Image 1 (cartoon, rainbow, N blue to C red):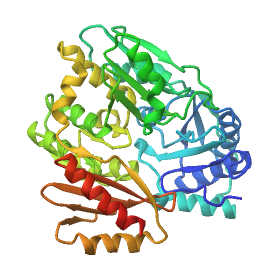
Image 2 (cartoon, rainbow, N blue to C red):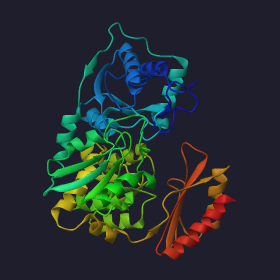
Image 3 (cartoon, rainbow, N blue to C red):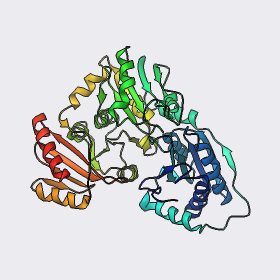
Length: 440
């Protein structure tokens, strides 16, 4: 019944099949048994089954003596903010992020919103849920205490990125929780909303800004009006995509470089970029007096490395943007407001800020089905061994005029390829070459 739902970064399955209210209740008991936590913040997204899952999860948590600080409907960044700002012992967000409406799940954190991953607790929770080896419940059960967090989160984020003149922004909420993120926007920002009604069936399009086709309605709206830029949220609003004033999609690693520029103008320090990011990102960080630090993919790894380095910021190619000022966690709202603060500071359009960052030619992330990923990586390493090899996450090999990374998917029998080059011709040739080797 539980097969495959306890994953590398979260717990996720199809409601009523692999993920049930009974499992949620047992998870609550297992969570308190593992962490010995006494105050747990719990938020949930707009999926209709998030409500019964909350009731069951809270029953398990309180049976084991923990108090539940019920955030109600919230975005995932809001749940992280609540965890560290309320000094809770742990936190759980009920969401399946961008997955289709039949899915749901749990994102799990210790105190200070430190993620629980497969290696740092999810496997232990799976064992406890399966065996029922919970700690004996105390004589007095915990309580469920309503604790809305939206206003406090909005005030915190708004104070970090002042907007200096009126802006118009088109926002595709994808029927998800992004409407609560934009409550942090000041009155100077006029929002034209698309698909703002929260609806866990996602009736208009997939809630993922990784897919270019999900921007079509946003781009149509922007072409029909005068906007400073556009935003596209995912389902639980911990990721956000950007378009410039023309509706052109901005690669998410270039947003990392842009935000790095903004933050480094205020304070120098380390900034993390995931290893799939353009060469331009590390160059911009260094050019602006920062310390560029490459990181592997995945929020648990990034947050750990951020804390160890005291990093100001980290950006991931998937549209996650992490901030020291938000407890080393994501804030889509803060990413959007920092871009807004930059655009409002001068009369230059967003495209003019991005153009100097478009230094190289990139493939975007390409997926290949492979039977034996370890053998594939070994073959590529042997073939391209004369380049500079890094094995931080999968295989990265750099040459003077191009580089690539190939890494295994955490969830599917796939490898993911990113290629970048100095010219379109080199990119096309190397991408074709790698594609042939990966398709053998």
